[in-house]
Image (cartoon, rainbow, N blue to C red; front, side, top):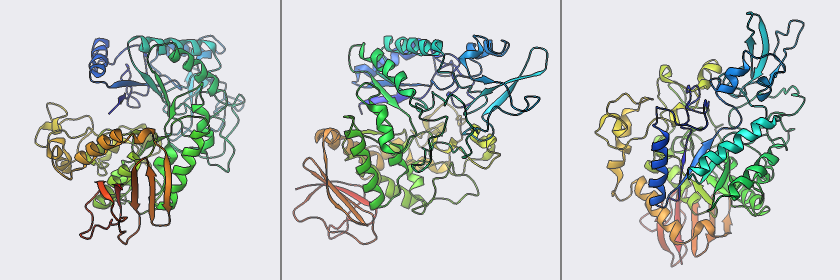
Length: 500
């Protein structure tokens, strides 16, 4: 591994798992202190690991000192100008300023109450009510985040993963938008760009940030979480004077089929090559159903926003088989690969999490129609026979863990031939040894059932079809996501790395 990305650890009321930040220059007591953060950074550096921290610039927590000052302030005041406050529509101002919806469900506006108890203005929150959107047309907001960058760079962090990087600038007229908001989805190619996402003004912000990072010694990095389509539009975020990388969510969402994989890989490489940036590859993260479960659903299934009791359940064995094949395919691609904690254990989604245990605001704001992201955020198992599988001293983990996770625990997989953990370790060693991340891709075949390419001296083959595929004559198998047939053929849903 080259780097560790930490989710938000800042002081927060935890309305959205820490993505509602109350103070960008401190650590929440839940997680420790600034001294602990300094020690972590130093320990990581001693192990040649870089540390990337999450930065949340689209919104703050409603507990942030700025928002607490804004609520009692008058309309048009300096305090309110840091956020997006507007008068309501209708004779009594009792209708939201526009029809925007929160990506968590429900209106994207909440009305305030004035000091005299009368209804007041409305404030914008594209996410939860506890996450008011900042006004990036205000120079004070720009200056604040430039200072926050320097605060953490001075402490030795190696870069930032920028949350909702495509959302900072809103269309000036806040025009109505009739299309429904869906959590974590890019703009459809054949539709106009939404007024709240991917506005051109965001790029000047990141040019300023890049200048700050470039002024520090060593290689510091900016990584965009930007749900933007098409790939050509996403590539704008990684032009030479902006960010270094952007998460490739189109790849994460691609169907498990040879044509779909070929199309998205080709499109991604062409788009980032056009601006001289590396492509990124990711299959799971803290916002989507884990790919060991997602790939166990029928091919073509619309990506669910969480899976729970009563929902169609994935085929666990098929999902893990495809997940291992997908990972081996991904790790052979040139560019940067991002792994989500637990996937190296083959960890599935917690698809039977009790609804009463859910904490994702999506569950409540959607009227209990979208179960949300808790199922991929359950603490991972370290020790099969320890309380909470080694997560803590008791079984009271912050989200309940399923009983079947004992078989996925790290101590059940370490040094066990064929385990998912050992597959990841072997693949990562080979990826580094053969320089695959800095290589180039040459397609060998891209039919309806088989995908094959060369990267350096390695040939990679994935069988998406039902019938076994014979290996090229004389090929040496360096890695395989599952055992090959007795005659050496590649079975269905298996990826192999070959030499020769």
